Length: 158
Image (tube, rainbow, N blue to C red; front, side, top):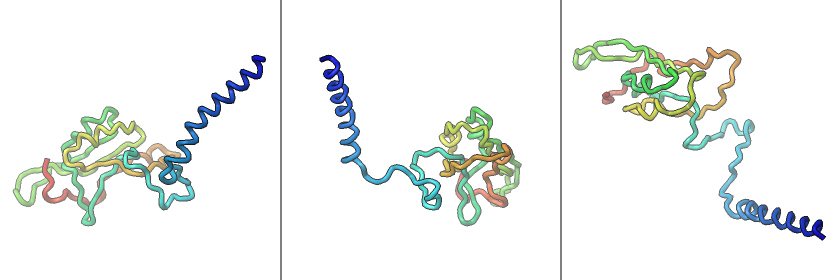
């Protein structure tokens, strides 16, 4: 007799667990959660809190917000960011001012901790939406974030 009672208890437990899953499946779906990747590669939108890779946005006039303060480079625990800068003469004041030459980002060493983005006083760097970073050569994961000929946006100060 205990054989049939064990089967009954097993089925009852299974249905109890499935009722929780079934309620969620039938009532709280507000749209598709699963992305049909790679079929929808053109329309793929990652979530707002997704941590892809670090990017430096530029406007239409090839200007960025990075002042070269190096706070992101100091905050990075892995040495992922390397800012190569030079002192140039400011055209408005005539004084020497720090100007970035290259903003090098080593994606292969990045742990996506976000300390560099949190510490940036001018919000010059942010998370990108790219997640396809598979390469055959590790040197392809080293990127220069500032575009050639880019300049600091007017009005951005340390």
